[in-house]
Image (cartoon, rainbow, N blue to C red; front, side, top):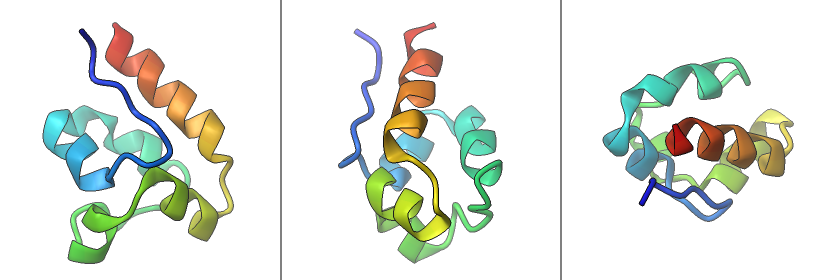
Length: 67
């Protein structure tokens, strides 16, 4: 079964699973992926701060992990 992301998934857990998804976050302006506070944020919290639709990011991440 593929790793599944929801809006409540912690960014640190995503990055621990597969760091190759970093561009999905940096493309939305989140360049501090490895700082302690970013690692503890949920996808939804990060998207809210950066003005990105969380559902769109979740979809992209899940498509990546489904491959």
